[in-house]
Image 1 (cartoon, rainbow, N blue to C red):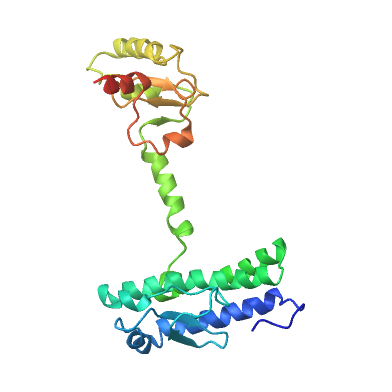
Image 2: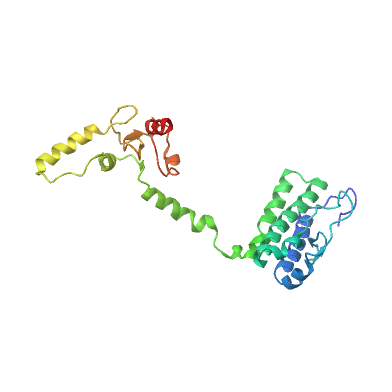
Length: 256
C-alpha cells in the first residue's frame, strides 16, 4: 500500500486508493447497513469504520502503534449508536468518514511529495464524486442549491426591499414614503403640491436634493431619506439590512 522506496505514487494511484476506500464505506452505510449496525455494539471498546482499497470495509479497534501508519478514523462510533435515531447516526458516521478519506489522501500526497498542482488535481478528482454524506442522506440526488434557490431569492429580495432606492430620473420613488396621502383637490392645486414636495426631498445628512444618479436609503424610524454615501451604506449592504436606523435615531436609542 505504501509503494517501494523512492518511487512516489502518482495522483492517479492515490485517487484509486481513495475511490476504493470510499466505495467500501458507502457499502457499510447503505447496502450492508444491517451488518454494520450490529457490529457497532456500544458494549464494545472504541470502534472505527475503515474503508479498504479493495472496496470492502471493516469495523475494528484503532491501530495500536503510536503514531499510526495512516490517519485514524473517528473513534467510538459505536457509543453513539443507541443514543440517536439510526438515520442521524449513519449521517454522523458518514461525515467523519468523508473527513478521514480526505486525510488519508492528502497524507499520501504529503508523504510522496505532491506539489501544489498535483494536490490541486487530486482534490479536483475527489471533489467530482459525491461525498459519503451526500450519498447516505440522499442530498446528491437533489438539485444544486446555487442553481435552484440563489437566483430567485436574490431577485425577489431586490423587488420587495422597501429601503433601497435605485436611482431614477424622477423623485416619485422617495416621495412615496416621505409624502402624505394627497387629499382630493383640483388638478391645479395637486400639481403645485407635487412641485413643493419635490423641492422638500432632501438628504437628512447633507441637505442636498435628490439626484437621479445616486443611491438613497430611508430610515425606518424617522422616515427621512439619506444619500447612501452620506451614511456609508452601499446597495449591496442595504440588501441585508432588515430595519435601517439612521445615525441620529441610533444615537437616541443608545442614550435611552
